[in-house]
Image (tube, rainbow, N blue to C red; front, top):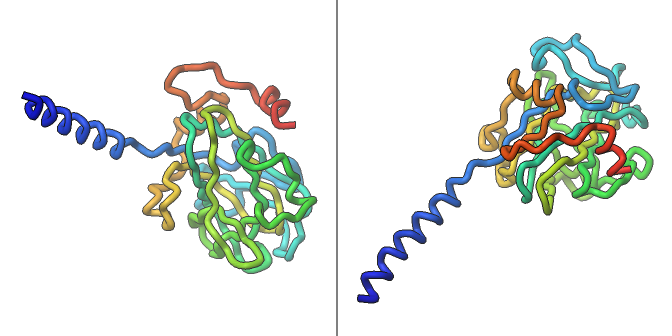
Length: 225
């Protein structure tokens, strides 16, 4: 009789494991120009064709190594579940003098001004290319370039900062995903923002199936300052 019980339990266990294995990845697409705060000399521009929704952000000017010591864009990113996350950027980086940003994502990263500390843990070596392309945000360390991932212990609002490091590096969109194993854009299922994505950014709505009220930008800034 006990074997008759064990067999259905094995089937149920396999079924539940299959459901867990098929759980969809978290995917959030953000327009760069819809950042909750953009501080000059980072600006919104529309001169480069084929940008998502016609706009992007950058520090305007000729490419210059280390030319950007100020300016940033801050994004509220509401993550719907705890876990590990990766970031991809839709970018243009003309050459070796225009291919980097500073990136911090709190609370996984400390509240640190990377432009001041020059901490290479937060230096993103952007993949070069004169046309828009996807590049996974990485650590550009002195010993090489390695894909970054961030671990969050709980769901909720987080603060992502993309800060100027070199003039002329362009950022069009950001893609957030729990698929940290992907090393190529097609593997990560990256996509540009839709009208629905833009509405969420503009209205400051939380990406939360439980319908909780979104945290306002002002209150979120106070949490991380």
